[in-house]
Image 1 (cartoon, rainbow, N blue to C red):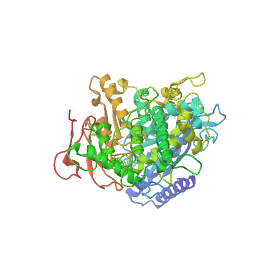
Image 2: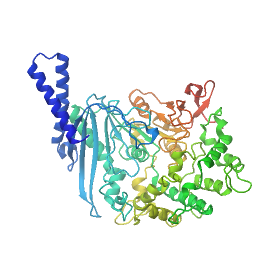
Image 3: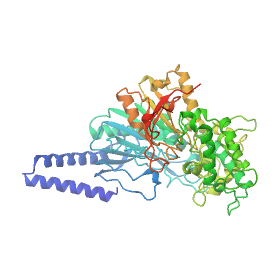
Image 4: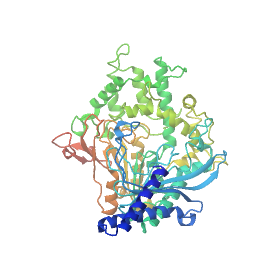
Length: 591
């Protein structure tokens, strides 16, 4: 909301109070309502007087406070259809703040900014909303987590988000990876990785206590992708900050996943070259390496191999662990064209490229550099292909647009100068050497004393402090996530379970969402409320043995419901309507 609108609200509130005072005979309910509005307005305005000392950070200051009126949902025509309309917002005090302003080693101005919304009708809870990608924007601070679910702000949470110390509009150097140029500044790397997260959480808690007159009863974190990584950072490095954490599709091994992105780009670019598919600039056109019809054939093969494993053929693979490359290979080979490629079959090169991609990156000695991916029916869906191949005539691969700049500027040490253009990002990945360049994510220099892996990676299995203080964590992850493999997340959970003598499920659980792509989308029941599940686990001791989930309007079966099950369990069909979750039960996998 603009400053002018905020001033208009303050003027109207003041005028309303004056009228009530002069009338003298206003009904008690109206008088109380006016008093409450004035109190909220005054408390919101008073936050601007907070100093660095009261904010818990010497350099911190509040830039603006506005009391926003209730707003109704509205459609954002630029948003993807599965996101739905922009959510409603209750009456709330909106706060913008800043801390640690400085001039970086690159001469640019850096600062940690945060965005806090304080609902007048507060439920006593605080939520830190995680970011995405490489951050660089304030975030909505509304607690919008999964499509189709109410926001945390609507439910009465106070919500904060942050840019984690850099601004995409300001810290943007076209000669050095554009918006990821901050990776060339070590202090900015530290802020992004961990420091800004801890500081913003602490400062937000102080503002909450000042506005409401008491601290939050419980503190929560929720995010997906980089937001999931941030949740892991809190649990591992700052475990005292939050009682409950939702760390969805966590980017907690993102430097290794970025190596996998380069592997994918080389794989599908080579396929496009063999097929003679080239862009006008002479680079391979990966977007056309598979048609949508080709991916339909791939899905048919996966379904033939694995769909029935969960007790019913329903277009979903619930038992992901059983759907291995060895089982899918014969079904895919059977789809190979006996002669020239045509629309009803796959080329042998296409099948080989898929197995190479989903097998994960390796060095020349065949040592794995990241995890494998499961064979799931969301492979080839629009939200899958946009990451790995892009959309023909519409959008380049996100692997190239985001993954390449992040790898070259933020994850390897020392950072590499790469122009912030699609062609330069493409060339960097095509030239990436998995023997020479992959180890650089562990590199250190005098200027960069901690490696990209140490800073941005967050795969520690030591959650003892988080567990001892009663912390609870839920980790949802799509079975067809194209950027962060659920196999890697499951492998991490197994190690945590071993470190906790087989009792990790007492405080942290992983939930596969079959068919779901990165955070949402795909042929999946991707509408679920993990935040309520973790709140009930923390506050009521209700263990989330399953989480209800529903398919959205863009899925093949709108309204279908399924239970999301904690690993290693999966949803197995019992009897009844195949579109109803009650027809399924969470069961242990067969031996």
